[in-house]
Amino acid sequence: MSRRRRKGDKHAHIDRLAAQQGAGQERRDREREQAARAAAVPSSAARWLVPAPDGSEVPVVAVDVVAELLGLHPRTTLRSRQGERLRTLAGRVEGLVSAGAVCPSGTLLLDVLVVDPDRRQDLAPSLDLDALLSGEAPASSTMDRTIRLAEEMVARAAAHRDGEIDLAGVVAPPLPRHDEADEVAALVAVATDGAVLPANPSPAVSEVDAGWLPASPLELFLAAASGVVGGGSSPTGGAGGAAAVVGEGLARWLDGWVRGPDPWRQSLLDLVPVDADGLLRDAASRAGSDHPAVLGEALVGLVAGRHPFTGP
Image (cartoon, rainbow, N blue to C red; front, side, top):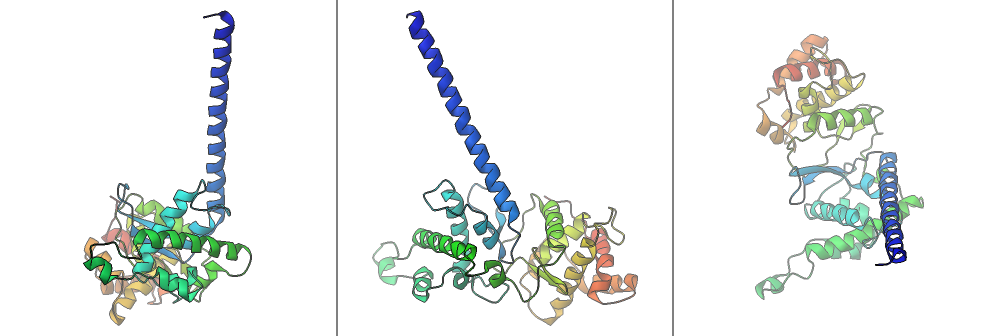
């Protein structure tokens, strides 16, 4: 091999390395841009705990439909670079739609994401008996509905960006987003990291006097039980106003158990036997009041002391 040939091969190799490094840098830039875009979108009330795809580290994950949808690049399609993220989100939404998920606002999730009634009918799960009896696949398959939902969701996100609709407002209860929402969400994330939470078709949000929180009552309980929230006799330091807010949410939830069926109650009792009346009574005694907003911190301390939770 001539010296000129070897030199040419060397330069070609250097060019390939440079191209690979450039592609890698572009990918990292896209990932940083995606992370920044997602972080800029506040959590919404369209939040559920849903089954994770096969092969995931945990069987159940939290999905915030509106925040994750608006966190995608505005030009995202099923064929774009973020197409897989859109497909995954649409698959989870399809499962929620099939379960008849209702947003905290009282509106069906399907109605929020799909405007045209005829299209809604196409996306609603249906049982094609003729196809089943003949051994064929039903006309409206899960994959087909997922693809159609993805297309509708992209159009709905565009309408939101154009100011035609406020998706976060449409799904929220008739309360403002609580000022401590982000801090509570961060504490819940720390407390439940790696924990196996139960899937639930009910929205994973809680309400207190001053607004709604992006966490289910069960997650609030686990955050209090882990000690990361602080408050009362908890062995950890306090967490500012978050302890009172988490405690108020818990107090309202536990107090509501006597008023009728609760979608999150059994999920907690499957984890630990809880004497709701005893917790509320003792918290009221410590706080000098039985008002949820007053006894909140005392309740958090009692939960941490009686039902310590250390994660998985």
